[in-house]
Each structure stands twice: as structure tokens, then as C-alpha cells.
Image 1 (cartoon, rainbow, N blue to C red):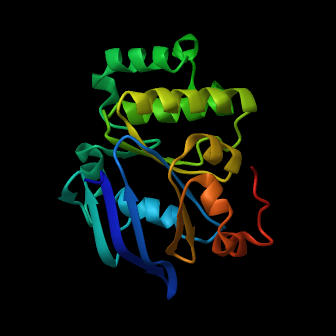
Image 2 (cartoon, rainbow, N blue to C red):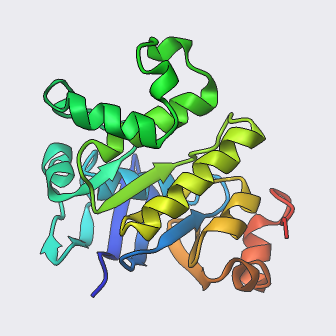
Amino acid sequence: MPLLEVRDLHRSFYGIRALDGVDLVVQPGTITGLIGPNGAGKTTLFNCVSGLIPPQRGRIVFDGRDVTGWRADRVTQAGLVRTGARRREHALRERAFAIARRLNLARVVNDAAADLSGGQKKLLELGRALMTEPKLILLDEPIAGVNPTLARELADHLRTLQADGLTFLIIEHHLDLIARLCRPVVVMAEGRHLAEGSFAEVAADPRVQEAYMGRRRWAS
């Protein structure tokens, strides 16, 4: 059974369709990549799934429960977490230190977040998400602004967490990371599910190439 199933999701803003009947399935234990040109509806989909905004039509089923229209805090409590979520951290100090050690953040655990590097802040976001003991983590551009060394470190952490049973859905514009880390890869365009498969399969799809034409050159 899928861990997350989105069916025929619709959301418009001021008459503009951000989601136009999008479908998405995330199987447990996967790192699923979600890509598409700017304006494809990826972030709006994340916002609906995580409870930040309600869809106008369609269904969101998580871990066997219909969570359509649930508030963000209730979605988080069910185990579906978006990076940056903050919940009961003061009561989970020991768990926080354990996670910091796991993510190689113990050396900066007493530093202010503002003093951390871009890559360390991304790891901090992941650590905050892990504090909620999630089943599925939504990552929105996890390596944006991160140097290559820390980007590789973050990718290694995601693989390790996947091996421990966590599931991830990732929006990322760095296609080299998607190619190395994600299977399957889902492509959105104009608020709809356009294609799905391995990175090589979607990159070879003429519909995907047309959607990206003039916007991005594919990386192998």
C-alpha cells in the first residue's frame, strides 16, 4: 500500500490553476524526486499535502488515512513532516543531541542558528524534522545554496535514513542530485503529473524535454 497517495488534486489562486488534477503516489522506503519547470505546481502540492493550504478538490491519503484538509499540526502528528517543522523541542533535549551527533552537528550544537553555514542550516532543518519521529519527510530544495561537500554529506544522510526505514519526497532543481539519489522521479508540468520513472527514463521522455525546453539543460 502506498504511504502517500494524492488523487485529482486541484488548487487555484485568483483564477490561476496551480494544481489541475495532479496525481502522485509515494511508496514506503523510497526517496521520490519531484521535478518540473518553474510554475509546475510543486510547492503548491507540498503546501496542500503538508496542510498549509487546503485543496479545493481531490484526496490526500497518508498511511491509510484520508488527511485531506487537515491542519498542518495534525498532519505532522500523523507522521508527515515538512522540513523546518518545530514541535516540542524543549521536551526532547536528549533526542535533539542524539540527532545532532548523527548529522555531524554536535560541534555546533550550542551555536546560534544564524551563525551556521548554509549547509549546516539545511542539516538543522532535517534534524528538526527528525525530532517529530516522522514516517515521511517532504524536503523542499534541500541543497539550495549548499556547497558541494555538504551537499554530498546531506545525500549520504538521506540514504542512511532511507535504509533505516524513512521515506522522502524531494523537490530539487539540482538534477544531478535527483539522478543520483531518487527513484522514482515524478515530473510535474502545468499542475499535472506529466511523467514518472527513473531519471534516465524521464529525461528521455519527449514530453518532459518539451516542458523544460528553454528553461534547463538536462544533466546526465
